[in-house]
Length: 576
View (tube, helix red, strand yellow):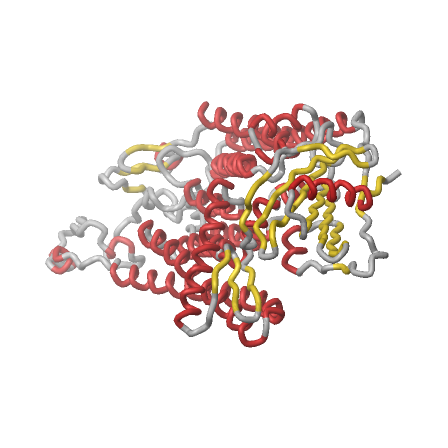
């Protein structure tokens, strides 16, 4: 949904690979004991136990016996909390699909349910790994790795994007000066001799930064790096992402200087793919080097006690009917067909054992799985029923659209760039300019989003105060919200005055929510009250429309407002 997280499609496959790798590296369950029938089994302390010994039913770790037991009350409490919180989270998410806090809450709840289920599947044990040689902790990182595909919190992402843009353009402008290319920075735009090169969010480095974080964490787990090395890998990924994006911006600007600004679009996407591949290969090489350094430094020193250990006694020195005294963990004890008649030892308590799931464990797994599956289905069905039941009684609001003055000889359509279409993902988009007299120029942009989960986010995240300043324009003033009557409608408009080379530029912006009880910009403040209000009212996204009109050639604000009202009457057409 969000092009900044386009790498997210690969995350589930990487998680699946890490999970498969954990299982493949685990020791397979041991088969039945190969101790001959009737033979005694020696314990580490020298005591012999028969086949019916209680130690066979469990395992000893550090002298303590661990037995499988049903889940504890804490397990049930955590499972119940995660399952219960899934209900309000889904209700809120349906009305606020773009809310980052809800996305994180939902992801954490699902991860919690998954880890608790894995803990139950492996068999609950207090002191030892499961019968598969695995612990729940072995699955923690692969399952939590899904979080790298969850959009970052807005309070962190928004300033980071703007900061990266300004830093990228600032460094590129300085490098162009070193290379002898005249360049001036205007916000997020670089002005060169052939025109202006705009730097969008994709060029800022945020996509590469997020992808570098994902790759750094993946390589750190793949090569089992230490925590310090993983942190270094993440920092290196951030540095590489920024450096490669500066190279990309520098390349695009050089193309604009040599071939004109129009040629930049054809180089934009190939340059982006090239830096992502370069960043990927650089991080991979760095992780491999860290792994080799770790392997070389991790060899344990040879103990001097091993060299000084006494050799085993010869057969001649062993009295009849006696067994020689071997050093602890002597290889001779495990060699079959030895010259000594040594009875086999009991397998190590840490070795994988045959499956010993108690019937109670299987019972708990079955009923918890059934109960959890039924609850999730109930939540999804209840969420849909809640919003459908309220939507049945919501009357459809009057729809409207924009008709440009095609009969004006000066009118012409302005096509949207591929990046704009990909980023905004609108269902209908119109952009046109025309002249009125000799000194007045108009431009109108109309966008419409059909009902869906992404419309509200895209419509409300690109307002003039954000986009105009990002394009290098200086915002002089901004008015409050006012309703403009047009053909029986009350369209909510906000006006802006922007500094332009030819004089003041007046911009009028309207955002319309289809089937909303009241039209306003309150939702742009995104307070908790505005988030929860549509949930309680059972109102989810039903589509948006936006209209942005720019006017050049009028200095007085009142005169510009009057001209805008007259022109709006001509543009708006109400749908019957």
